[in-house]
Length: 441
Image 1 (cartoon, rainbow, N blue to C red):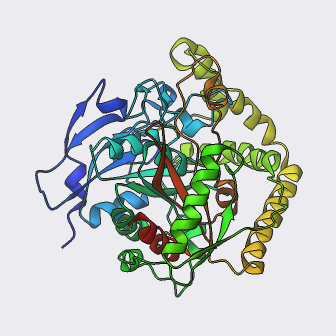
Image 2: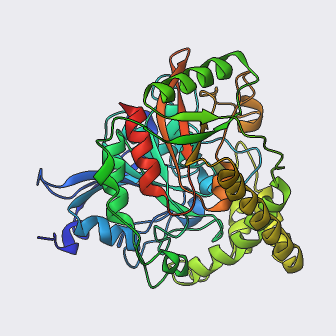
């Protein structure tokens, strides 16, 4: 029997200054029913009657009028919304010098192993809430790396589903071309079960209408698989050039072989279209944000007004980094022809990715998700701090290509986790979950 939706409308709210590692913005006391599954939700997702801030003081009065589509689905499936998670302000899309895990609403989320280290972002609080045992499952969002990076860096499972599998309505956007919500949890099993709950078509999100008619949503069906018999992976070679990465990838090749699978080297001449991707994000951010705001409690606000608010409150909002991405978004919104050209280039590169999988007859790509955690650096931001000699990463092609991507904890460097990534074709979410389950064991 589904629980009534008023479960989280009438609750006692406990505001907290500092929970474990500053992962949460607020905790909701909703029910003593132990049958409900406790879950934390990133603070760019609407919960009726609660503030959705994107971590910014500029939206501190943005009280949601209704639940996001995925919140409705979670409540109907007996999940208890335990609290809102801190995030990198504006999902790390305000400044190129931003510090992951920091927001003007709640300050710095820190790594569970050492408070001087960064948990990555932008779904920092969601990841840390799971890693510290506050909950076993959380919801994050990703545009490019915002689920996979924090999941890998703190040592949990993170799933970025195929674009369109999970609704984005009621979620503060960066870019319609890449945004998705996804589960982050202690195991492949709980991630699979939660993805099963939040997936499905939403009339308010056109991307979800692309879900194939015969799509199998039973993601948890194959989580007991303990082998990779006959499975063929293409190797994501990022990291192979340093001593840690090379050792890890050789170990991964050996482990996959022992489970009955195979990893093959792929001749990959693709060039990452970083400038084109950035232009698309800049262009779509202004229009997507203002479309969201128009339906919100902050309907009179625009990107320009938020910029002005930030400037007027710069001591609180911009003590460490600015808002040059916001200014760039205003400029990019006038470049429609360049935007269309960039979209075509990214589609071409994604087509090349699928063609590589077909050419080498691989079921998925596999490799290292991201290098280990780095020290928090308010002087130079993530870009300066992350250069720790063992930097590597995968997932960008999955992000702009809308491909499913799961990361699971697998290795360690100086006790800091390093995850492995499995990236599949569009709508192969169930298959890559089963591959991850086998490797998790």
